[in-house]
Length: 406
Image 1 (tube, rainbow, N blue to C red):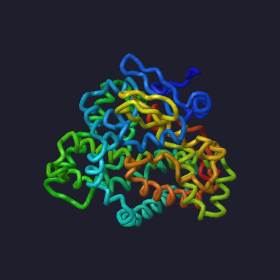
Image 2: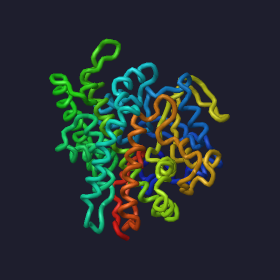
Image 3: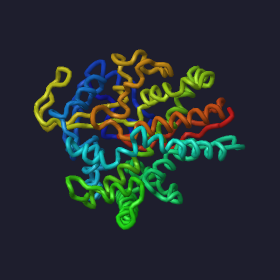
Image 4: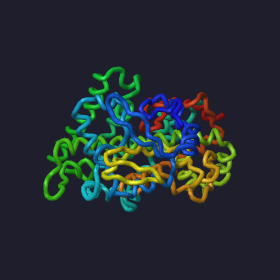
C-alpha cells in the first residue's frame, strides 16, 4: 500500500491530532511499512501495532536510543549544532547503564515519597486556579487553565523562581514549536529562542553550584556520574529536558481530557455522577488522547519485528497513538471508556527503562485538576475546535477556547 496523505516528516499530518484513519489503514494492511526518507535523512520503518512497540521498547540488545529518540523533521535537523548536541544528551537518548546513572540523580524527587511531599503544593495550586476562574464565563483552556498547575509544580520541584513561570510557558512552546511559524517564524528565531533556554538554565545552574538548595537544579548542577561532574552540555540538556517534559505532557493531556469529555458526553456525566471513577479515567484519557506522537529506536543488528526484517542501522518509528488504539490490545479502541479495565497498559509514558520519570506526578495533577474542574464546571462547552502546535513529535494544543458554564 502507499502512505497516501500521511507523512511523518510533515507536521501537517497531525494538524487535527492523531490521524487515526491512516493508522488503522496502515495497521490493517501493512503494520510494518518502510516510510520514505528525504534529502536529509534515510527511510525508516513505521510501527502501528501495540505488541511491536512493546517488544522494541524492551529490547535493549537489538535497539538503541543513542542514535535518536525521535524522527525529526528536516527543518529541526537544520537547527544550531548546540541544540543537536544537547538533544543527543537527553536521557531519552541514552542506553543502559548510562541512562540509569543519570536518572538516579533526580529520581528520588519523582518516587512515591517525593510525590507525596509535593501533593500539598499541587492541591493548593489547583484551589488557587479554581478561585482565579470565579466569575469568568469563558477561558482559553490551554494557557489559562491547563498550563498553570503543571508549570507551577515543575518550577517548584526544579527550584525555578515563581516570577519566571510565564517564561517557562514560552520556553516550553519554543522547545516543541520549532516547526510552528507562530513560535518559530524563521530558523534564526527558532535557534535564538531555543538557545535562550540554555542560557537561562545555565545561570540557575551556576547559582546552585555556589549555593546548593533542596531542588532538582541543585542535583543537576552538583551531580556526579562515576565521580565526575556533568559537563556543560549535559547540564543544559538535563535542565531543558526536565523543564519541558515536566509540564508539556500534563498540560496537553489536560486539554485533551477536556476535548475528549466533550466528544464523549456520557462519559463526562459518569465522572460527574461518580468522581471515584476519575483516577481510572486518567489512564483512559492518556490512552485515548496519546500526547506523544512518536518515539524512535535504531537497530544495532539485523532483527525481525512481527515477521519483518529490520536491518542494522535502520530506524523504527513507534506511533504511540496507533499502538494506544490497536484493537488487538484495546477493545473498541476509538471509544473513550472511563472504566476500561486495561487502560493503564497504554504506551503514553513509554515502556521499559525509558518509562516516563514524571508519570506519577502527571497522573496526580491530572486527577486533582479534573476532580476540581468537573465539580466546578460540569456543563462546560467547547467554543471552537482545538488548534495544535505544528509538530511531528507531540500532540500539543496551543488553543482550546471553552465556555465554563455551558
